[in-house]
Image 1 (cartoon, helix red, strand yellow):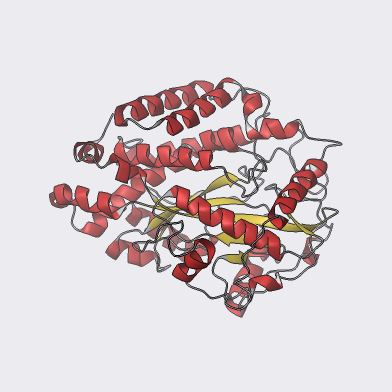
Image 2 (cartoon, rainbow, N blue to C red):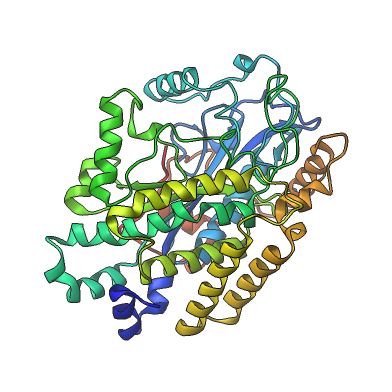
Length: 465
């Protein structure tokens, strides 16, 4: 069950620390008007200067809002930040604006060049313009959820004390830990697409005539029709990962590290790849979740708990394959994801056996480390989705399709969440006069000195580009 590092974590009775990954959450949404057309409103004035606000920004296009929570030592605290910031964003919108609750955009204009690029600093705008010019005219429009996660310092320091003789440096040890977790997520993305995919169709003008699938699917956003990576890095180790990205930049396949938009990115808090080779990686960015339209914040607490299960499992158990076979294994997993993403969401996946085997392994793992009932409930929900594909998010969405569109459903949910936000008796308005507030100032203003989330400062993850 456990590999050597997992056994050390288990023997030192720090499994609770091991599963409390530091977490920051990024949720992208699209602003629309009451008729579901892309908004023409500028960045909300109540959020202050968008170039200074670290927590609510625009993404590639001005219509895209992105909430970036501070890193918190517990996922529940990250969710508290997300709820508060989501409510803040909604209360800052113009009277006729809503947040579209789906990953795939509403009906688009025929000429995508009329969608304004974000009003960002000149160097960032130049990057966006160059990126858009090298992609299809809709590739940067779908939105989703990213989880930024880092391993507890307690875990890293405890395990390091017993592993010093096996690694040349503390940085190399940290990188080995992150590489193994990254490999697990790259391979098992197909299962996450099955369990959480929620983009079965595209609205009008997303595809050109004759393009796109001819049937409903599990996740357009997670398929090659969505935001696909131009290259596949070498995940054998962090050093191989860094070298492969830099080789692709030098070879002209990428023009910067930020252009790699894969489902998993290994990150340095400084933003410089080479720093990871000296000091170790700071966090992983996991970028494979569609928006969940059944919740106002775009991602459920139960989903985050499932990711914590996966993070802990990948960290404490044997790697997917020997080092010389890992990239072949990951290539297989990437191909499986494309198959799953394009399957009919009402039908059982062709990888049902593989999914069941892995869930059984997670059940055994959870029983061994004695996770609480809330995690058993999450695994039970995942088992229900494997047994009955009609319980998956994408299949549930198919029940709401009217005239080949989800617009009616999306507007119903968007209005529901907006009404709820407007009922907040004390909405946060601090950004208007102080958009560049620090994490500590934000925490105190949102939750009070003694409120949630907990104070935290360590190897924190930061919002990514």
